[in-house]
Image (cartoon, rainbow, N blue to C red; front, side):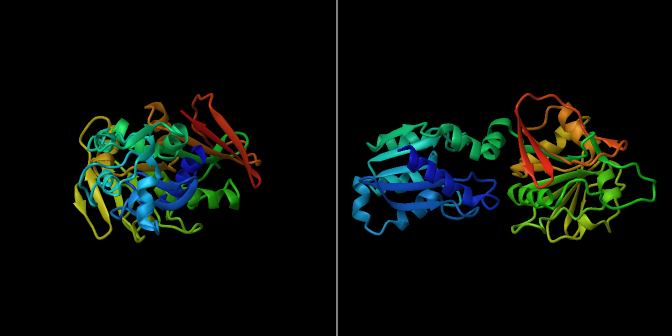
Length: 341
């Protein structure tokens, strides 16, 4: 049984970067120990995993003698698609295995109740941890009422993010290697938004796209309280939306929206607004000050640090924090140090 749910989890991962703010979901249908149908949620607004799996079964008469494995509780409400719980009942599938319950208040156990009320035997919790990790963005979004937050930076072996610069020195300063850059761009395709502060926008003038990895670029989030960043900056000239959080104006341009924040806690208000906009996850690639503000206010779920083998001696210090949960991986000439709560 476990192997079938693990297969469903692998299928679900194929929806990464395409289904948010929905969860990634995979589904496998098994008859007499043989997989007869598979599916996954492919894109936001499209059919759910259970629909694809049931449609893929060539002999529908076998469904009444089959088991269905799904990574998240089948939905029980009408949204952009009909309820999957109803489809499972109508298909007369007698056994259903569910990895995780859905914390969405529109579902939250109602899907399981509907299946059991129809006489279907439902078991919950198979491969719970693996499925929850895969859907950590969705679960955090629903349970914490804010986006999942991943902080990322590169630093030298002696703990500096950037060299000392004069006021006229512009452009990004590469610390990590090409392999690290490709991975960073892959992460961009997996998150809903990428966030920086005004200093990074002014000094580095980054594009913040995923040009070194196939996939769509995330929306851009700029925290610029005093509106110091000019509108000819590169991040404003990409084929995607840029949200600019500031203290001065509220307006919209061709590909940007300026959002005025009046509350005292700027970062909290930004995260609240992103949640209301259904931005499920944020990759923070700002400078040391921006990153440290997220750490100090405990707004993070995952931290990814590329540590180069080069030394700088002085410069802009990397953020500081404490965490005992760290994984280390070698990426080209760099170390990838990953921290998790």
